[in-house]
Length: 351
Ligand SMILES: C[S@@+](CC[C@H](N)C(=O)[O-])C[C@H]1O[C@@H](n2cnc3c(N)ncnc32)[C@H](O)[C@@H]1O
Image 1: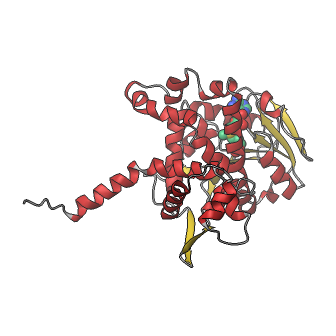
Image 2 (image 1 turned 90 degrees about the vertical axis):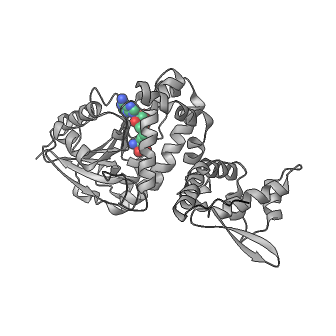
Image 3 (image 1 turned 90 degrees about the horizontal axis):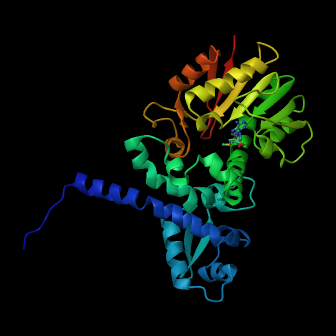
């Protein structure tokens, strides 16, 4: 009998290949855990719980306990939940990763996970090779229209997207508000593309010396909740932006190509009441290779793939790419402030 030997590097390569190939199954298992509300069931108990307690919490009369047990084995293996042995019955508990599955927590990522794993939202990735070969945007090739126009005719998908934005905003805003000092700003702060105003409300609540203008598309601000110290204004950021002393632009510019970003930044400059005002951009700053910054490297480079697939011109930018569009828009000076999350703060000044 002949035996085939493989060197260690080949074995490692094969294992790495399987790791990537089955990566999508991790995302699917996260979605399954969310649909069954496994984190919520564990959280409603005082401590770690058994498989039958999870099964009882799910509450289906035809529940397949063996399938649930195999799902839990996978989730524990992926370090999404913790497991400890107790009197021969495993006990399951939340860890720092599964806490983000808790739907009602302030810092949840549940809506983001539901959106990213939604078949409608994932389908453009099947058109990515075509868009690379022949040009164009994978999302457009999938939906026949831009992703924004697809949302306009699909309120459920639009809600899923807005919920996903709201939950990732909540997560980032806590880090931004506690790591960036808004006390140096004065007068009016305009949040450009501020959605329904959640971010600005958090900022003016902590910094009440600031007046806030939450600026977004008319149909978005029309459904916004009223917040003290925040006025909602509807319009188009590519045409004109309301006047203010400083401008906050959080995870907007990564959706657009350079020319559109320069237009938005120029509109901010034109609406700045004093030349000493600032534009404060909260967006990702990629290293040229996409790695070597911190534990969020993978999230940033992954988000760039999402931008590539969904948006016309959308991309995550390196510092050199940020510098180029800022200079083109007339912002000659800027500083990058690193904060412990996926985005950084880029403070840009006219002079
Ligand atoms: C990715 S979301 C970011 C929302 C918010 N800044 C945040 O961080 O959660 C992009 C936002 O840009 C808004 N937007 C898109 N096109 C716009 C336009 N032409 N004028 C104003 N807002 C626009 C969308 O309605 C959406 O709220």
